[in-house]
Structures are given as structure tokens and as C-alpha cells.
Length: 174
Image (tube, rainbow, N blue to C red):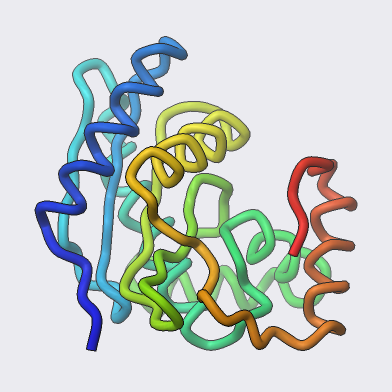
């Protein structure tokens, strides 16, 4: 069984901090295991006081929903999916988990091979900036946000790509 180690998380946090500093946006970064339990959390100087909780909630949400379905590739897809189908269910999930569920950009799963080993959440900038920072840090440390052998059905990929188009994301697809 693959595992996400704290030392790997520190490298990711370092890469996030590097990009956020370059962009001039202080953020918080949270990384959880596949079950949503916290592995690492850091708040940059001057990041908003609520950003650590928001980053952790983003990471928890991605872990929870990505574990349930390959349809949920990131926080933006989760957000749009609930908006289109049952916004009240998202509110209920948040209430029932004591605020641990939130749907927003800036979070993604982490894979080693075909196994989801965790998820991260970034909070403090705009959703688009949180996403950009996450993509940069993933690339820098070599984290995959998709399984090595993608078995996602074509209908699911098409659906996710339609959501990306609907929310104006032109540079990403499954």
C-alpha cells in the first residue's frame, strides 16, 4: 500500500510557498491522507486567519469525493456538479461533517501509481490562483493528480470536460 509521507508534503508546501510568494498571495496549504486525515498544514505569514481551515476543508472534500467517484477530479468539478444537481446536499454534507466539506478550486487528489494516497487544498488567493499554485507545485515535486492507468469511463471524462468548459477552464481536460 502506497503512502504519502510528511517529508514529501514538506516539499510540496515549499513549492506552493515559492509560487505563492512569486504571485504575491499568502496562502495556507493542507495535505490529507486518502481518508481525509491531516498530514501537514502550513499558513504563510499574512495569510488570512480562516485560510488554514479552508485549505483543510478543500483537501478533505477532494479526498472524500474523489474516493467515491473518478468523476470528481478536483474542487472545481465538485462545486459545479453539486451546483447543477443538488446544492442543498453540499450544504448538508458540510453541516454533517462539522464544516469539513467545501467545494472550491485549489484542491486535487494525489496519486502514486493507481492508488490515491491523499489530497491537498490551497486557500488564500482567488480560486484560479489557488489552482495555478497547485498545478505548479504538483509539477515541481512530481505529484500526479490522476491514476497512472486511467480507467475512467469515456462518458465520465466527457462530463468532466463539459464542466470544465462550463466554468471557463480551457487549458484542462481529462
